[in-house]
Length: 640
Image (cartoon, rainbow, N blue to C red; front, side, top):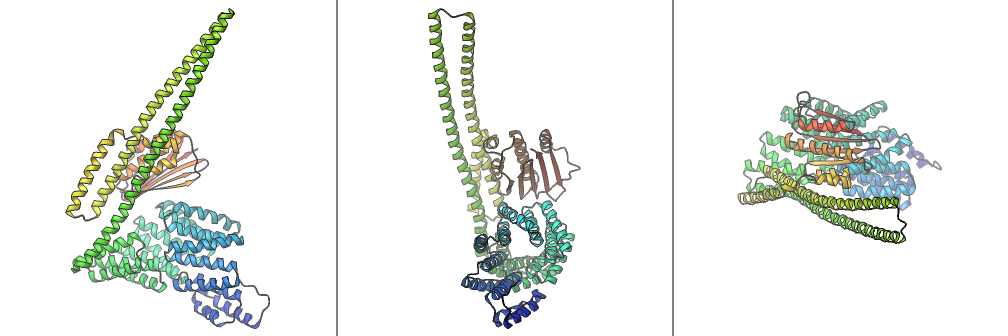
């Protein structure tokens, strides 16, 4: 805790007050503030109190957490205490992370990491790695998040730091939930629950229950979701973890709102969550609670309060595009009923601009990547062609040289009259080998011509496929957005142009991806294919290594078929594709939120049977998890 060289009277007084405040710390932070402000503390004592105050206020009071972290950093810099400066920068970064200010959080965490590395403090360094992983996790950079988690985990295991290990288990579970890999998320939450119960770690028990609640809500198991949310809220309340309690209460409100249509009950919990988030001061959670309230008020036809809640939420925070678009929609819908024409038009324009911005950004990114890939393909094809031509010229030159030499040799032997029948036979063999070399060279040339023809056809097919994806994306946009008559005509002309382009390119449409597969490998081929669809997300874990071509082809074909099934037949809005490459196993997981099917009743689909046959041919296995209305998850595993 704190070490002292000499125990002066003021130091002994501080130690007594400090220990008194630390007993029931969450309830006695005010007393500890008085110790900081009213005692004659040494530098080390002052910094220790700042560290504890800034850390323990993280879940209760954002402003105070920032205040004491900054105050401690200033003192640590003045006293050149590098260790406490690093710890307080970590606290500051975590506070901004909890307030959803990710860029600022990353800045302060990087400062903390720099100083921890300089100090060679392994555990502090690992703690910062875990915090940076959290920033990447909530920002959607899941591979980066997992990388930082795996940097931290061995250090905590080395020092047997079970508290930090439990924290990482919860973070990894949250990562898999974000990937909508619910089975993996549930496995890690279960491990977190077990470890936390053994350690009587109430906070992480609450985290596990809150995770189970979100998984159950995603699976539409509303009864289980409500039970777990209530358990989590009770645990967080007893422990004084207000931010976590507010999130759990929001989960309770969502169950009453979505399943029971019990709007008064949902409103009661949403207001309770709002009061907690306002008390803490985390703007993102304030906006989330107000968003739930706005939806409830609209369904109750209380358009005035619907409008009021949406306005307050927009003023609080607009960093979450999904929440913001819902708030804009509520402003428009409520404004129509209240005849607030000017405000309704203004927020409709904002709603349309937000949707257009997101859609346009996705479209432009897809087209830019397609153009870049097209130009790269052309350049690489030209390079390969020149290399083959150079190699062919070398072969021709070599063959000509050998032929000339053989001809001179024959003349020489004839002139010397020492040629025998055996030598004649050898000469014939050499001539046959020369002819075979010429035939082989011609075959190489013919093969090159055929290859170039096929590549040209494949390239255009890729363009055609992307144009089809663009057409589907544009059509989806039209379904969700109100378009004026003039824009409808322009939209239809664009759709007609796309149809004509697709028809023109249809004749060259089939084998581009297999070619990308053979040239660059499975990761690149699958990543490129998934980018063709705005609602297909690709995640890759493991070493970037090539495996046997036959295995890569089987995995690629399986992913292609499963993605197309999800989008065309299952009506999925989100498809997650996860590829894991280990040293002795390659695993493919494709999960969608489509309509699902009864796996016991529907086992004769041609597409699935084809995948199962191909996988079995390379000693692999395929498992399907699905039920009507619950989406589908398919796992393919092949031993390398």
